[in-house]
Image 1: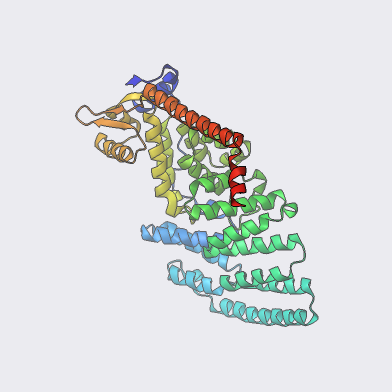
Image 2: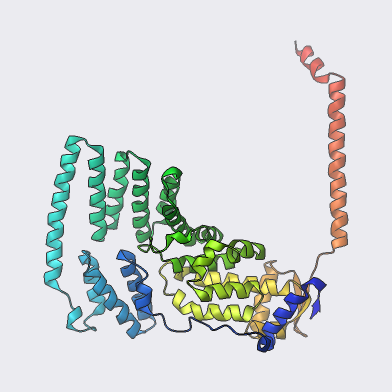
Length: 447
């Protein structure tokens, strides 16, 4: 390889070492996430409905891959969690999915389900009577609380559409900005569960219109909700910024939606896929607040550092080991392939940038791929104008097409001269018009 700039020597040495057997000179970091996901530890990060839905999502994905052991473990934990609540519809669905494979202890408990349904009918009737009384008395705060109680009731029983309507109805009876924020947070929670992320964005904006009533934890919750909405919309750079703005004070205060480990993973991968080197350094690696999240997921921290340090083989190894577990994440699974492709493309671009020429055999070794496979990837990036280069297919060398700086400088100078000439002519014309009072004469003629 031939270097384009003497100052890039250290980077070239690192890249060379990482790609061509030079790893012996570098202490290898352990790969953390090669093991199968520990469902019990994972589920302990969450509470309420999201814990159940994440477990059911894992069960469905494991069922598709014929991983029966992991599927049944997730279903068993979901069953136990559901019986702590009142959602009998979801309970029956889980029992149906278990299909007797966990023994008699996990069969349908008809008596429990009927008892819960009966108590639910009684509670609903009581709430209706109370709300009607509040409406009659026209006490706004009581009416607000009545609708809020209905929202909680419907949410507990899995009727998310009705829960959303009830929470939103409280808006007409809110008398303080704190009431508005409470309504927004409830609407956001249900909207995330329903997958209605346009509502999430809308109610995050409404809540942010009352900054005087927002504490640090609530602000962090709103950042996370906005991050999820942007992630779902595939606006990965916006998602990264929202997660990076989240304060570590969030802790486990929003574990009915997201765990701090998720903030690190979602934010880290989105940033890696979309940020340039300067942003990655300033907004991620040197971000003290986000560093607290990254400490919870060491493999994400290491792969970001490896990427920035041009240790691509190690970075891609971490990504490869994380992939199976990320595909079990209810929010991230649809985006894993896209994010991984973007990260890999950025690595390829960054690898080739310092050089006039690159040996494809050495580069393929660095990226743990074949020369033929690498060549196809590079061809796609060249066609897409992301890499300015050409490939010598016979000798397997990539030649950079660096712009002619001398020619570009002359073109800029000429263009600057043309702009200056035009501006001077415009000024001279304007001064002559003023001097000869052309506008005044024209107006007098009309009169």
